[in-house]
Length: 178
Image (cartoon, rainbow, N blue to C red; front, side, top):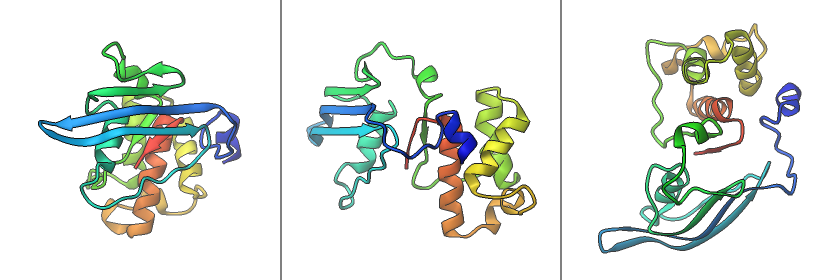
């Protein structure tokens, strides 16, 4: 992780830098108000948990944070830039945001490592050797260990969660949503 921390990636030390701020966010689906006045601040390196019963709006909030759902009110600020407005280059911004869906599925014909490398190589056009080294560090594997060479069906639940989070951080570097 030391090499990643030097590059500002995967450094879990809080810095005091406000990375994400949610101010009074409201979201409705028709007449049903799903989010009402949500406020949240996240510093760089901070880990937060959004906890609540099924149907309370957790996933909707996360989808709003990643621009997959528009909000009807309030502000979502990433490093001071308001994402709730219409003038956001989401393609560029998503180079810094990773998102793992609840039912994250990998391509079964590829290894875990090939799945993790897909975004950095195809979308970000990064060098394979560098991307692979960073992915191995995020997976906590030495090059001789099998983790990245396994097929998606060969990993257990905890390893799958680690793999998904590693992939999201690897692709984004700033924050990820799970």
